[in-house]
Image (cartoon, rainbow, N blue to C red; front, side, top):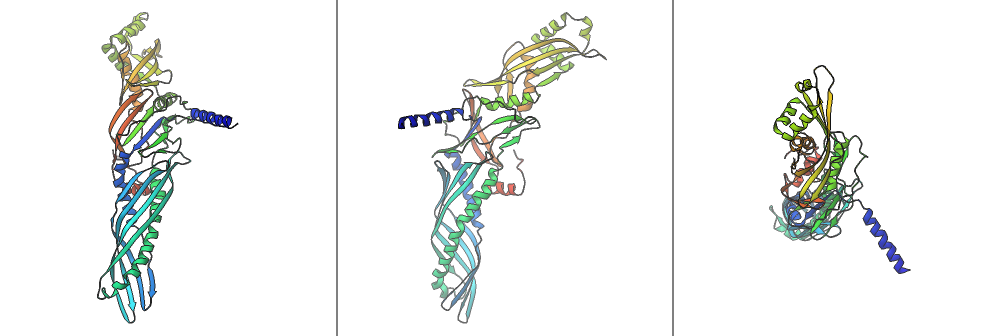
Length: 461
């Protein structure tokens, strides 16, 4: 019975894995990428801790009465580390660091009153923070929870003023209370930074957005990110759709891209489905059709022997008077183009129908012939270049620009505002391509978040 139960569970798991939707797009952030984020994360945390506000404190010890106010953090010296926490998310840790503070004191002892500034330093500052990463209900990466522990080993105070030395002996009393209050402020500040500010930054990542006025793209996460000691992997749907009919989409039967590289900061894998869904959406939107006017027909006639031959055949059985009239070619892609990606490169298969028409002045156009073409177009970023064939020039002037017109501008990859890919390298595999790149911040993490909160967008390139 036990063996049967195990077999059923294994079979159900296998079926679930088989039926799972493969990603059209995958992103891997490696520990090298995380290394670059360390400095930005440290600056961001320092900024958040610098904004800590502490309440006014009052107390009494024997004949002493004291008030502490206007507490300000003036300097932070943090020794920090950022690394992956397997199966959870990210770990940010601060060890044996220091925080310098300045605040005002008011002290009454019997009839003596004194006030002045106190410079204090919190030493042995240790912070242990774990960010739990998940896929939210909209398919966006999100910090679902933060585990934070912070403690300060000791705090020293240096008094100034006329009675500074006299009050040194009550320094322990003041710094003990200050250490307790500061300790209680660190984790709430980091909680707000992660669960509010960083999540607002993650909300700038496009999930389902318009590419142009014709098609959109779905970049929603399919599942929670997979975190190991050396990388964070995310599976995105990576699917284009027609804005006029968002529910009519292409079924994903492509292979699941496999990422094995760790040398660069980030890797982007795009399957054949990513490209096919885009071509399918443009086709369904009726955009893969064009008309070549008389002057461009003449250009084809002059520079393509094959085209000249075809036109001559089309006109050979017609009234010679037609030869004097303007000609027109109507080209239409008749079925959704399909991409094929192999280790040798990528290509797109296009089925086209070409109608040859003559345009007599003052009369309706007369169709002379209709041609069906099946072409294989090699795809080389960012242009489509046709392979050798009898209709090469015709496709180069008509079909290729027709497709390029809608895809050459590219689409935004699922990265937050202010972050870009640089130094890209493309690798071709059977069924998908992999783009390895390094990351670049156009501006600091804090500036990105502040701009987002103010409603601004980053239009820099």
